[in-house]
Image 1: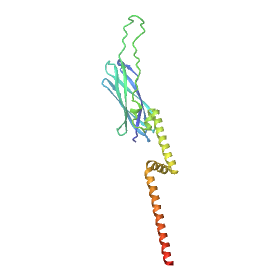
Image 2: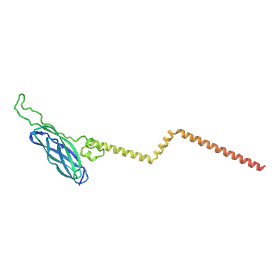
Image 3: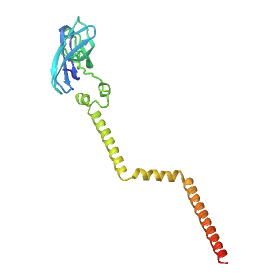
Image 4: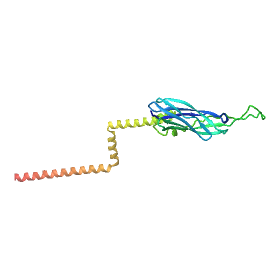
Length: 232
C-alpha cells in the first residue's frame, strides 16, 4: 500500500573524527489512512558516509524511530550536511529534511602545560536538529496532518480560527436572509443613493392625478350641458 509520511525527528550527537563513526536517530510517521511501507535513508556531504537505508511498515498515524550509522573518512572535523529522505512504496519522495552533524577533531593529551591541567577544549558540541520552520516544513495552510506531525500548534490554531470565522459569517448571512434584511438594506441604500429619482417619481404621480381629475371634471360638465340641452 502507498500512503504519505512525514519525518518528525532528525538528530545526530556530535562525535570525534578518529572514533570512526556516529549515529543518527530518525523518527517518521504514517500520515495516511492505510498500512504502508516506507524507505528511510540518509545522504551526506563528501567526507561523511551514511549506512544503508531502512524499510519500515507503519499503520495509519503510527510513528517509529530508526538509527542509521554515520562513518567519517580521515580525521576531518567540522559541520556536515545530510539530507534525510522518506520514500513511499512506489519510490516517490514524500518528505525530506536537512540534518547537520558536528564532528570534532581528536583531542591530544600533551600533559599539563601550566595552570589547571584538568582544563581542556570544549568538544561537547550540541547536536543540531534542523527541519525548517513550520512555514517551510508545512507550506500548505490546510495540511492538518503535517501540523500535528511537526507540532505546529500555532498553525492549527490559525486554521481553526479561520474556520470559525467562516462559519460565523455563513450563519450571519443565513440569519439575515431568513428575516429579509438584505432586501431592506438594498432598499435603504437605493433611497439614500437615489433621492432625486424618488422625488421625480412622486412629482410624476401628482401630475398624473391632477390630469385625471381635470379630465373627469370636463366630462362631468359636458354631460351636464348635454342633459340641459335635452331638457330644453
